[in-house]
Length: 217
Image 1 (cartoon, helix red, strand yellow):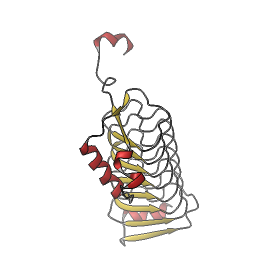
Image 2 (image 1 turned 90 degrees about the vertical axis):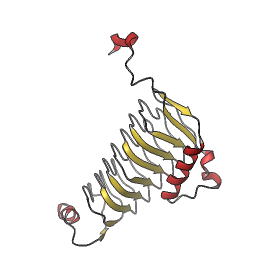
Image 3 (image 1 turned 120 degrees about the horizontal axis):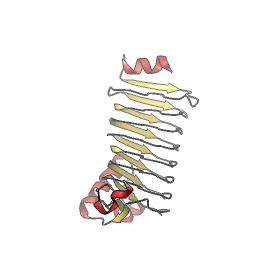
């Protein structure tokens, strides 16, 4: 793995295939060039972490922290993902074609995440910026302590976290959602029409200092 990532950090080609990854950890971590990388099999922890500009496709499932702290580029997972999908991501697009486990989008800082299936509890916890689109259901505690990230969910929500509320879907949000779905390879019509999604975001009560709550700080 060290030799593979060393090559990807100072590439001699523009496209790569990783064969038989067998769940290895940190595959294609720290790539900072506009490469095309296909990982043909299941990957372990922190696959495509810190990606900055590459197009990385995992033809299988991934473990914890896929695309953690991603800056730019595209990461696509053809299967399911474990917890902490796109954690602290600053930019780029992350697509999970299957479902994702708990803490999806935790502390996201500008990344866009589109999940074709369901997500687990405590997703978008302390999400600061970016967009999270969920085509299935969301678990409990969605958007707990959220800042200015936007969440779109097509299915049921188990429960909203602290300071997260449902918000109006205005025309600009429907247009934004259609653009995100299209970028992820999902045609925004029929059951995936933007009007079938609900939008969630911050009530903006939690991150403002209130004098009458001073004893709680």
